[in-house]
Length: 135
Image (cartoon, rainbow, N blue to C red; front, side, top):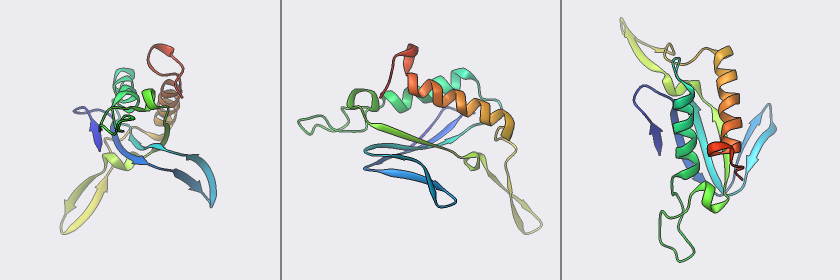
């Protein structure tokens, strides 16, 4: 699933039975059943954009209920895990110059600002809407 509002953060969301992220062959994050989310932050994203994305991650019904009826449980209602991965490349554009294809990342937020924005986004995702604790 690709979740995005026009001209705002981009999320690529995948249901997983388990997922992990490794850096230099060391696992730095892992989850059991839940969502793996690639998070792209645009240069002019706001806290309102982050809130919209947080709510989509927590409240969208991706799983069936106990009777097997599809699309009835969300991360918040089912107690599932979320693994987020910062991914500035979601804002890459391919530019053509004299037969070459170059990538342009000018729409992605700069690295220093993105680190702060992403950390705040993760904190808000952990606490959930209106500061309610989320699994």
